[in-house]
Image (cartoon, rainbow, N blue to C red; front, side):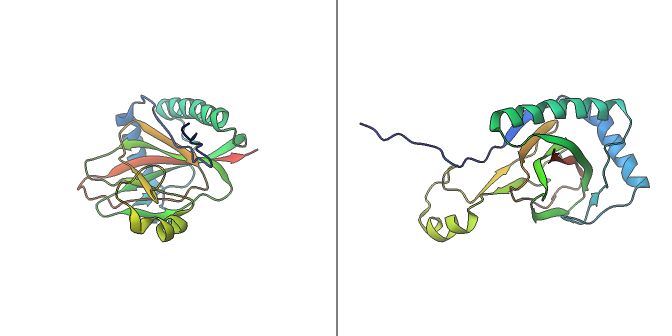
Length: 192
């Protein structure tokens, strides 16, 4: 009899396409960045806006509608706590700009939507919650990396793609090695 493999303590990461007019969204993000100051949170270089949930445009309204549907699906699938309000911001990373490893305290679901993604503009890196344990015990013996033994996992960003993950999941963004700007929208959905 073969042993039954149980995948315990899984970390859900959802990936989907939203089919938004990303050219219009990119233009609006760039215009916004010209008249609103940048914050300095996880970004090293580049631009991070304050909350943009009040931007009143058709493309952002469509984005929020589709985003809320995907967040609802994530809640139903994972049975995580229900969310209410969200905080949304623009990221614009120029050449060599990146985001250090961080999580989103007080959030339930976080994620990123990719608006403009030039080639070589940096992957998003997700860290296994047991990173130090994996590196201490298993790492010296790795031959092949799988979802079971990897201390990190990366996604190559794609335009019009959405990633959702638990807010406690530590993540970072590699440096943008392109001469063009990478534009994304990040967000946190908080608990009720």
